[in-house]
Image (cartoon, rainbow, N blue to C red; front, side, top):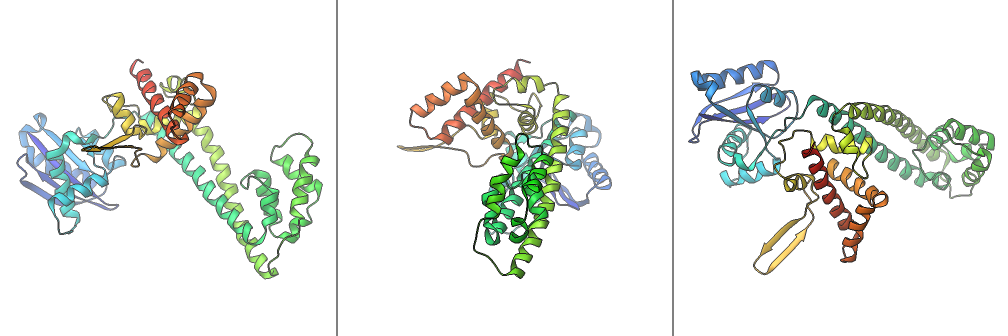
Amino acid sequence: MRLFVGDDWAEAHHDVELMDASGRRLAKARLPEGVAGMARLHAMIGERLGESADESEVMVGIETDRGPWVAALVAAGYTVLAVNPLQAARYRERLSVSGAKSDAADAHMLADMVRTDAHQLRPVAGDSPQAEAVKVVARMHKTLIWERTRHAQRLRHALRDYFPAALAAFDDLDAPEALDLLGRAADPAAAAKLTISQISAALKRAGRRGDLAVKAAPIQASLRTEQLGRPAVVSAAYAASVRSLIAVLTTVNEQVTTLHKEVEAHFGQHPAAEIITSQPGLGAILGARVLAEFGDDPHRYVSAKARKNYAGTSPITRASGKKKVVAARFVHNDRLIDALITQAATAVRVSPGARAYYDKQRARDTDYNTALRQVANRLVGILRSCRAGR
C-alpha cells in the first residue's frame, strides 16, 4: 500500500493532506511546527495504515529539502520528495486555471503531485552528517563573502559621492589597511593630514611587508589630491555613514577568516576530501563548496548526465521542427555553479588537459563563458567517475 502526503510548510505550521492511490483524500490538518506537529502527523499516518504500516510506503511532497522537519520525515522512513517551487507552480496551473491559491489547496496539490509524478521528482538526498556539517559552514562562509562584496560596493558608492580621492588611494576597499585608515580619517580634511608614519603603521598592522614608507607615499599623495568638495555638514554626514560601513566590513572580514578555518577543518575530516582536492582547480575551500552542494549520497545521481544537469553545466536543447537552439541552463544552484566555474577558470591555468580542452572549445568560435562552462561540465563528469570508483 502506498500513502501520499502533501505538506505545505510555513514557519509556524504545516498544512498536510493524506491521499490514497486513487486520489481520494483520506485526511487533512494544520499541524504546528515541531515535535507536537510531527507526532500528530505520525498518528494520522499510522491511523490510515493500521496493521499494514510495516509493508507500506509513505511518500511526502514538500517544497524544501532541509530543516529539522524534513530530517524527521526522513528518519521516520518516509520517502521525502523535494518539489521545486517552479514545478509546484506549473502543476498548480494544471489543477486550477482560476489562479485561486490556499495552503490547504497547495497541500492537496503536493499530495496529488507525488501520487502521479513521483518518478519525475528527486528524493531528498541521504547525505552523511559530515557532509551536512561541511554544507553549513561552507554556505555561511560564501554568504559572508557575498555580504562583504555588497558592503564594499556601498562603501565605494558613498566615497564616490563625497571623497573620490579615497578611491584612487585604495584599490581594494575591504583591505585591512584601507578600513583602518578610512576608519581613522573618514572625511577628506582629516585624511589629508595623515602622515607617512601613520599610513606605514596601518600597512604594518595589515601585515604588509617590504619598504612600507615607499608604499605609503602614493596613498598619501592620492588622499591629498585636490577634488570637488561638499559642504562640511554633508561631508560629516557621509563620514559617519562610512564609519558605520567600515565597522560592518571589519567584523565581516574577521568572521570570514574564522569560518575559513572552520571550513578547512570540517572538509578535512570528510573521507572524500582527498579525492575532491585531487581535481584540478579544487583546494580545500572550493572543494568544500562543491562537496556541500553535490552532497555525498552515492545514490543521488543515477548517471554522470544527471549530476551535470543538477550542476547546471550541461546545456539544454530546444528543438521544434527545423529549429534547434542549444542554450545554457539559467535555472541552477547558484552556489554550485559559482564554485564550478571558479574551479574551471583555475584548472585552465594549472592543468594542461583542461587548457587543451578549453582551447579546443575556443577554436570552435565559442565565447569565453561558454568554453569555461564546457570545461566545468567535463570536470563534473570526471569527479563523478572518481567518486564512483572510490
